Length: 225
Image 1 (cartoon, rainbow, N blue to C red):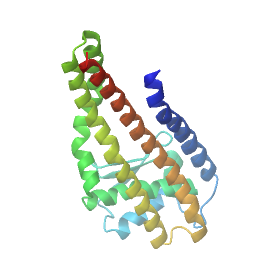
Image 2 (spheres, rainbow, N blue to C red; image 1 turned 180 degrees about the vertical axis):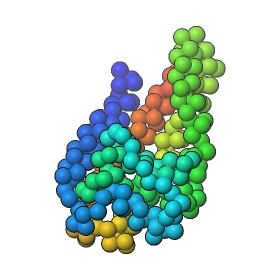
Image 3 (cartoon, helix red, strand yellow; image 1 turned 120 degrees about the vertical axis):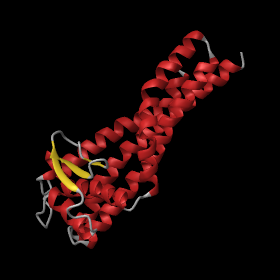
Image 4 (cartoon, helix red, strand yellow; image 1 turned 45 degrees about the vertical axis):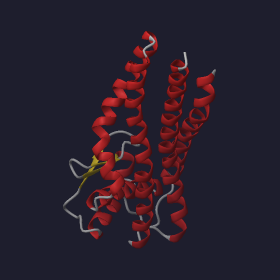
């Protein structure tokens, strides 16, 4: 019951965020942009106006909402529902991912930090729970603490991700507006698309923090025995 009380707000937000991002994307996928440009066109235009034309690639990838920027390959990868589509949702997502490319080019601090902790976070994500479980089973507070320390790296990753994603969305709005890629009445719609996506990152961070809090409460309770 204690765990449910701690995790419930994050769980509710996660469910809502997943529903919101899918519903918002579906809604604005049906709204054609006034300029009639595709997600790939948007990414290409933003890259060129920021001096990255030819330096950062643009590729189409399979899957829905699988859009991402690959810093290792310096490539903006857009899903099929974004790359060749001219909807408000498509141009918003494309601009957001291109915003990450701009962050990378400008060595944006939070993004650089996230890149550095990715290997640690990946290891911690897979190792922390088994170590915690073993610690609880063996009633070893030392093992539990090791698991908590590892899981803390996962929490840090999610917390660092928040400003990275919010900043990319802000850059997207600025780029779309300054380049004349969207009309004034389209900006609020683009913001709704990007705002819905931001909820998923907030929910992930809140879930990670809630789990860490629960593990700490168990540890403190075990240490008192």
